[in-house]
Amino acid sequence: MTNLKGKAALVTGSTSGIGLGIARQLAGQGADLMLNGFGDTGYIAELCQSLSAEFGVRVAHNGADMSKPEEIEAMVAATEAAYGRLDVLVNNAGIQHVAPVDAFPVERWDAVIAINLSAVFHGTRAALPGMKARGWGRVINIASVHGLVASVNKSAYVAAKHGVIGLTKVTALELAETNITCNAICPGWVLTPLVQKQIDALAASRDLSVEEAGRELLSEKQPSKSFVTPEQLGELALFLCSEAAGNMRGAALTMDGGWTAQ
Ligand code: NAD
Image (cartoon, rainbow, N blue to C red):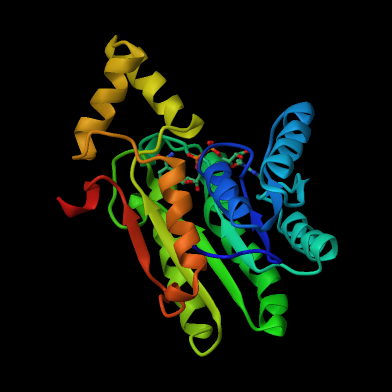
């Protein structure tokens, strides 16, 4: 068990999917939470309240747009102001756009690089001084199998995720003599809204049912033929927060149903 009582965690992009799964696990071990991400105001207020009631921790939300460096800096400062500390930073927010390189909209390229890569730099840069001052910290970057291998039509995403793994290594090396670690998690397919959009597009383009398209998507790349779950990824994030993981530094950990073993 990783005891996070008295610690504070900021999980970017945690109103949905993997980020929410990780936030739940951190709260389950006692961490106060700063959530981030888009969504309906009523939904977000209810989410904060229900997580707080379920786990007995403080939960707040900051709506920083991860494509805006100044909003990311302000969110880190707001977390430190709310809880007096920021111990665990999970850089998770991400978007996808699918198109061949020569038809890739420049605006989508810029958005994917900003949210999936540059935001990791800005969040880390803002969080490290406090972690260094307190002498402990965990930076967990949600990369992807696409940080290790490529797929067609995902140039911006693959470039960003390879960049995240490079940034993870540099951050880990710079912190190697401290109690602050930085590692990356590389999930395969996880059934979240980000992937549901790709399943729906596949179903429409191939005249398949949504279930058939989901199976098709898995069988193409993921030997387990089952989706990785946000709960499984949350457990891995918890391990990275433990003292047992104190000398894991700059690792890119796959949880991908065998995708990258092929
Ligand atoms: P998701 O679409 O379910 O959630 C994305 C979250 O990011 C949401 O909370 C959303 O509001 C937030 N977000 C998006 N743009 C934002 C912005 N500009 N500012 C602030 N928040 C923003 O996606 P997910 O599948 O849970 O993905 C989470 C992370 O996991 C991403 O980095 C993604 O690349 C990575 N990942 C996902 C899969 C998968 O199969 N789903 C696989 C590998 C890696």
